[in-house]
Length: 345
Picture 1 (tube, rainbow, N blue to C red):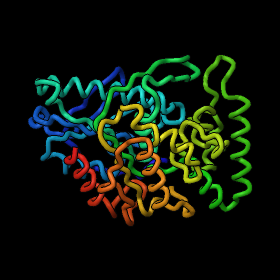
Picture 2 (picture 1 turned 180 degrees about the vertical axis):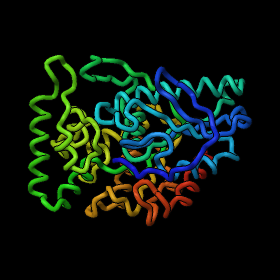
Picture 3 (picture 1 turned 90 degrees about the vertical axis):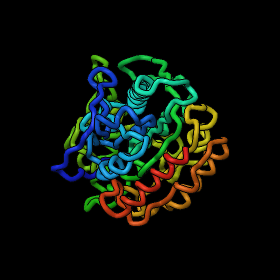
Picture 4 (picture 1 turned 135 degrees about the vertical axis):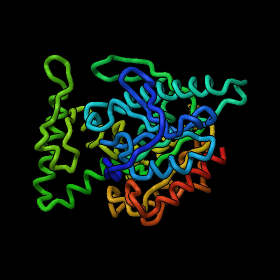
């Protein structure tokens, strides 16, 4: 899901890092303090997000300014309008590059024995939460099967913690939009047409991704950006809940067996070294009314703990009154919970 645009007219001090060719991460910190911050929090936005598009990030950066944590806002090739032609595998590959870069950067700033190395946490907002979970639950190395690239082995460096914020289901958000449409039958028809087109013509004759008509995808409430058949099928996951797609990680109707394959595998892979925190917005406009948020979080917790992972029960929460991107109500609580989580590591 996409989030609301943050307030305009703000400026931020920091350092822009090119962590890979044509990919950057912005470190919110004054140049004089950057060298003294040994710990790192990498923030990953949702669909259409980029630098400073999620409202609470500025407040979080301000709060962390006087701590030994520095906040990095990462840009991926899927940021802004690139989400529709990317994938979780590609996002995870680029996040892994950023993790390596920041580990090396902090080691060069604060040389010392490995036992004194800083902590690194990844935090996802909205669809960025899918990136975070996709980073920590599959086997390492990850087998990427993107059509254009063939099979690749993606090795992800370990992280010390992981945070999911606004981990809503794109599929359920799409279903909610269809049901709320003034012409729901017509909108459902558009959805069915897109599914048929995506399944029958996923690629062009030259083996490139086939793009779906914008005048049709916009009727599903999707952002007006190029959307490939491949990514649409992953987000819409038409065979769920029986056969969920790669992107369908947070739907409320997924089976316990499926949750054991995702949340339940976190500890087995050993990529996340500490504990998982989840922050769900109480008034998330992308979460359908039929979703029992308390029950859903308890199911995720049970699956994670059954697999041996540590769930941060003290700081995980449903933030009362908060919207999807926590524009106003709940910002202070969110930032306080993130700060307590980081300090507990």
